[in-house]
Image 1 (cartoon, rainbow over the protein chains, first blue to last red):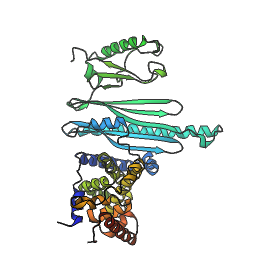
Image 2 (spheres, one colour; image 1 turned 90 degrees about the horizontal axis):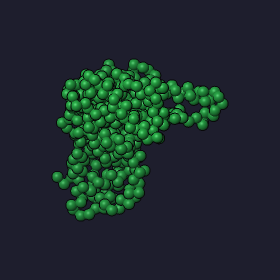
Image 3 (cartoon, one colour; image 1 turned 45 degrees about the horizontal axis):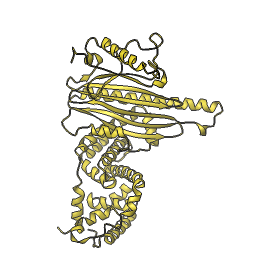
Image 4 (cartoon, each protein chain N blue to C red; image 1 turned 90 degrees about the vertical axis):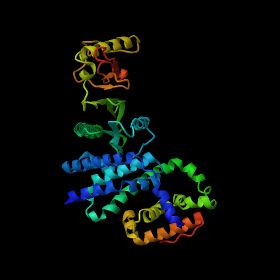
Length: 287
Length: 165
């Protein structure tokens, strides 16, 4: 027992294994296999290009949202969670791309999980593909009009996510894509899941059959309130301003469980107002 | 045919995940970072599993990816903590019997990363020197000389004699 190697090895083997390991491995196995399948299907896929020039940057504790996401992941006992599948950064002459891609893991309900994960993956792939095309076009135009290729400003894209609500009943998270060329433009994709029912939530589920009226009322009120500040300007109804929410209006649930509808920049107000969010209090009849 | 390679690789990864985690942890010394390194390595390995022609090399092939990822992280972070590093080495000299027990284990961290790799793969993962050569993409003689040099350094650091086997 006095063999120092044995003891060193024992110390090594006592490295505590986190409970998340098995889960992390399983999700990485899935992500890796999926990526391989995709790679085989589309020979010259973006991912292949990414993999060859990607420099993997691990930002574990650097990003506050990531820290928050981690702290939101309960180790055991919860029905579902959102976690980071891959995180990568690409830097080359045309683009600076920063992606933190989430995926969903649900106990039992693998169909819904798979559908949402596939959709996220497809959406992000498409977004990145489009961005790559756009960067190439922009650069070609820049060079064709006499620009020095070395001075081309790379297109900056970042994809990130944020968990808005997580409890035993609901899971709500949004994915943000921000593209910066001359000015920044963001897009939001929201995912709201009823864990008990095992399906995606609609505004109607949250606010009841009169959801349109309820939401419209709340948004109008919100606009009226904010417009009292002369710095806040909204487009007038009829001139591109707010009239009604869409049937598939983007929304998420906040920590209180209330629906928050989201309007993208320019949608109901001038660009400097940015993205507009309105919390819709739950109507008494439903709660 | 290559379906089975992919399946074998997957099964191998799942079965040995704790070994991978420990090895990654021994470099990055941080739980979350080690989890990330393991995940990243798995994703890379599985998505490139088609480039693994001979499934007999599956183990060394995967360890190579895992070590590359670990080293990348280690290098990036060492730059960030280099000030602390500079102050450390002399402080933890052998301190009597009680400390001696952990000394060898702690001393391994003082070796340079390539030496750490040889020592850990040999003594903690029971790899043959030929396998270590494949993992590190060096020839057998280099591995041997690194091993002897590492053992010498460990002897200097701990004041104890270590024989190879």
